[in-house]
Image 1 (cartoon, helix red, strand yellow):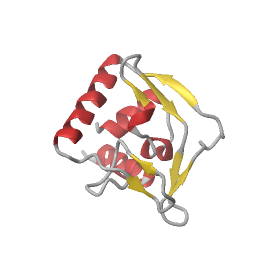
Image 2 (cartoon, helix red, strand yellow; image 1 turned 90 degrees about the vertical axis):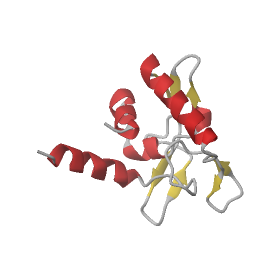
Image 3 (cartoon, rainbow, N blue to C red; image 1 turned 135 degrees about the vertical axis):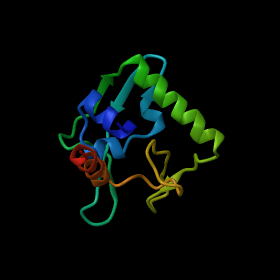
Length: 121
């Protein structure tokens, strides 16, 4: 299972909320994630500064998941793969799940991966 799916399953987040997660929203000391924004692909890749329900939420995550995210963050720093991404509005974002240019993953890629995984025999 990929980290995106583990997060979605553990915290009950929507695909767009997982894709929009930034490092600043993870608190590995108290093992929490703040879900406060969402990504959509309706007219290109767009960041909404609210969730679908217009309410942010703090979610407690297992220590093991927090440790895994911490390891992933350290590896991205080591690989020098932590650079801000700007949607063109002058605001920089450091997304957890991103491509090599630090552009966030498409929310629908999470469900596509899940379908391929569950269809394997």
